[in-house]
Length: 438
Image 1 (cartoon, helix red, strand yellow):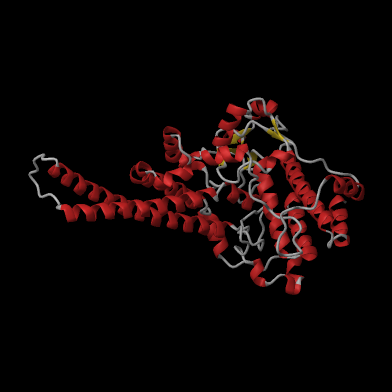
Image 2 (cartoon, rainbow, N blue to C red; image 1 turned 45 degrees about the vertical axis):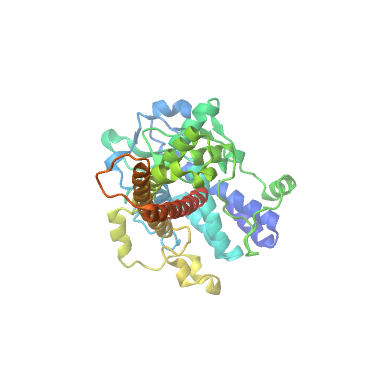
């Protein structure tokens, strides 16, 4: 009934940014709570019926098997989200085989909510809302069902439920070092958590997340909430979009995680040793000629791993390659608001295919910068060797090989300076690119 109330109110307040944003955010919470309810239904016959609580996590090991290593067909949390939440025609590669759990209640409510948002606010707002659900889901759910084609939550060896334990090594290290007393992630901290770096581990993140409470009366709740919250400050050029998916909020936590990413180890070690910031390294000859190439190689490796982790399972690729019936959705009746292209599997800019392509382009760009840096370091070292040979000759130290003359020395000096200038530009480009990622 509450979903129906929200849908009705959306039509009434569709031109009101504040009310619309509140209702859209409430739908996020309701969909996540519907997912949790289906999870608890699946646990009804298990000894431990609340494994999401750290106090009962140890007991839950009797029922749960965390999947790791080569047994994992899915290695990326966003792919797991597409499997658990997606549907044929969602624009986010959600066309997966789900033989007996396609119509789970949380999935139906999520799909219906998307459809209604398209009807009321058009497809861009629905895409933004879908992204917010995904981001909040990743930020707030540590133990997740590991599904199969036939089951929402599969049973493995000994009848244990095969599960995904979501963790984030840099986040765990930060909390252990700076906030060891923290046990609950509150709402105001959700958007400080990272979007990248989540992975399946042998145990989940040891924290609870406090989801917002659900109101019993939507109108009364709107009246109270509107007085407590301002209209969203990040507005879209599209006047019909009232709630935007935003990047990670800048905070001490987000800045720490950015600096301690594994692929930034070379940069972090050098800046700590030299007592310089990253922005000061673009003129540091030692960094440019001995560490920059190693730094870019680490970034290339990280992007390559990200691209590989977003490969769909072979069985899913085969499933998606066969023709399917048109999506059974009211979206097909929306006329000019939603074209057939909007229903393509990867039409969402945040779709798995689009993101994998983005990481592949990033990897290619990094490889280009790496090639330039390697060439310039090679030229720089050649020039320095020639200059050193001339200086030894000028100092009267004997040389058995041919050494450059004064003209060649000056030419090598100019070329080495050009190489340093080029390396400085590459260093700036790499730093600016990395600062734009979280």
